[in-house]
Amino acid sequence: MPEIEIGTVTHYFDKIGVAAIRIDNGELAVGDTVHIVGHTTNVTVTIESMQIEHNKVQKAGAGQIIGAKVSQKVREHDKVFKVVP
Image (cartoon, rainbow, N blue to C red; front, side):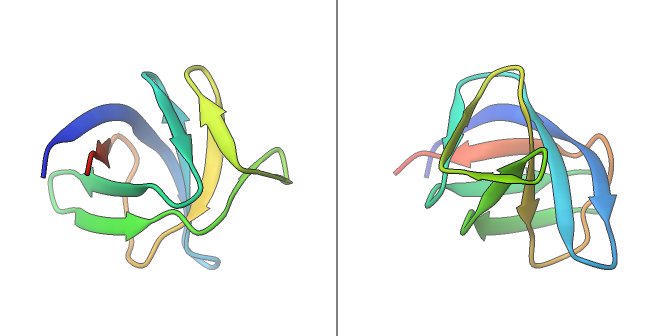
C-alpha cells in the first residue's frame, strides 16, 4: 500500500505507551493507519484515539503535535507515514 510521510515522533512516553507525533504534512484522523519507521523501529498501528494538550480530538493537521497510543516502543526522530488505502 502507498504511504505518505506526514510527520515525526518527538517523544515516547514509555510507561503509558504513547508517542508524541508532530504533523508536518497533511492531516491525521482517528481510524487512520500509520507506519512508524526508524533506525530500529518498524511499527504499523491504527490510530484508535488521539489527544492534543490532553483533549481528545478526531482530526489533526500540519503544525500540531498529537499524542497517540502505539503498540511498540518508538523513538524520537522516527518518521511517521500515513498508509493510504
